[in-house]
Image (cartoon, rainbow, N blue to C red):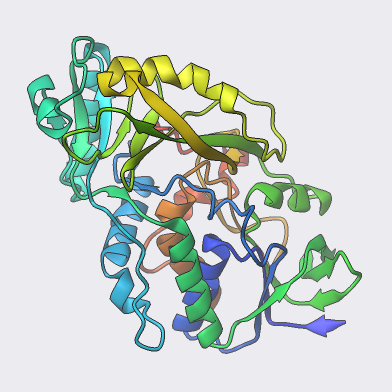
Length: 386
């Protein structure tokens, strides 16, 4: 039996952001982060598309991204270790939702909320779209919703910076896999590892992403979260684009952006829940006609590589589940991000740290994302799902 004051299950961007924020908020007890994959090869963080946006339809998601924007803009300097900047390659080339005429009224409604919360989003005409992507096919579009502050970044570098800073503040990382959560009398008592080792801890934070819900359910604390495979494709077009792309979402749901001089694309496939890292080149056959229609330059391209990653998909409302579980004292979760985790990690880590250290949220009120909302039928219904 080993002891810790807090055990965090999962050392990806969410777990590492939380560990770092706990120390920055003055938590002086022992913190152990249990991460089963020291290379992070199969972590959701490393396999993320890296998109960053403030273009949401709910206040809580907009506020989280607004907070994260300020963090990521100053990240390189603020998270430097021993004088070495934490470069995360944050390219603020914008985030663009293309829209048919039928979609524009909904985007106009979202725009009002975004602007009221300080987001400089704007509705673009088809001629405006061509100023951003000159090659774009606009005959079937009515315009688009765009935010110039947004863009994309390197998720792996963000995670590593949080981890290094947390370790520098005395957080212990161990390479192991948690087999179960241990409880007694409605209180969290710790975790047991696959090798049989037990860690006693009055606080356990589940940041295990696509694997987190299974752990919770085995402890009798089910959550509406399932693992879903998401595939990405990297290609090169014969005819190069005139300008660098924002992260662009087609009305079909297909998205694309630049990655160096290549283009990365993906879409949310209809797949069965389960852990699956099998990448299929054949799935690109669905994307190619859509890409070629939207940007004629993509009619002639070479598919070079790709990868598959995992969403921890919230089946109830596709939004994060954050906070202490109402049925288990000392059990905190940060799960169900449905692809938004990288964008929300700075604010979620800070929020959990405040909740644990101070007993309440101070910087951002994350109460709308509480575990209880499913029983209370108070869902966070987000329209802007990718």
